[in-house]
Amino acid sequence: MWTYFGVAVGGAIGCCARYGMTQLVQLVYGRQFPLATLIINVAGCFLMGFLFFETLERITISPALRTAVLTGGLGGFTTFSTFAMESLLLLEDGKRLAAFLYLALSVILGLTAALLGAYAARKL
Image (cartoon, rainbow, N blue to C red; front, top):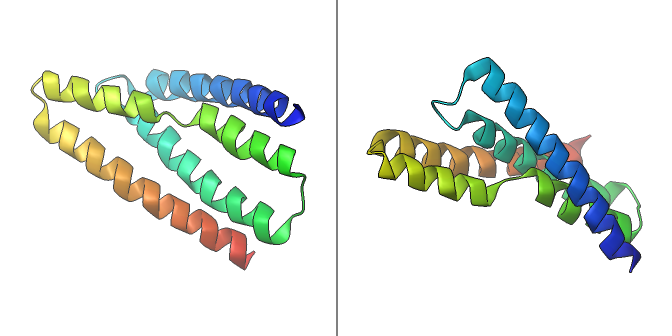
């Protein structure tokens, strides 16, 4: 039961962090390109790669806390469903190049960030 509670609290924190970061990025860079979601997804991938291995190989925390952080916090922070919807909207608006760029950058940078996070966790 504590694990579910932890996931719920972590999810609430992650969602608030995502909302705050979205507001900040859109305030600075505008809304022409879904940069906020791209930044959030790449940062979330890095954090997932880093924290997954850091808490598996170096830092001992309870399984409930680990699940709360990885599933709740990062699950609430990253925005794959928003990513999919923004991609669809770009395509529907006839912005095929922007849609392709967004899809490619999200996948390539996300995977790269996860790899870097895993590498950092193992080398620090």
